[in-house]
Length: 142
View (cartoon, rainbow, N blue to C red):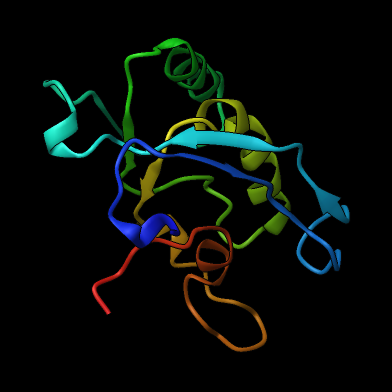
């Protein structure tokens, strides 16, 4: 089953990219990446190690945070509470942020929540959160 199958402790393999070149600087896909979902409550030992971060941005401090996350092998789940790239409507900043966080975010499942800096209104349609929604597909109750 997919990620919504309810099975914990499963290894998933994936790639990311854009075959059309419409949304980024380059066409193509990443190397194959993988992550493991959190084991089910019955199959795991406690405590559950969760990283909760926000206001990541793109600074030397952001890079240091990514380094620490990448090297902490105890983290089983991450939650980002908004204000990710600070792109503020400038698309290439999303791309540079993605490259910066790729190694620390690619091997742990993350729940990514938008903050006020993700509101960004798309120029033509005035649709809010377009860049965020294009990059992050989170579970929903519907």
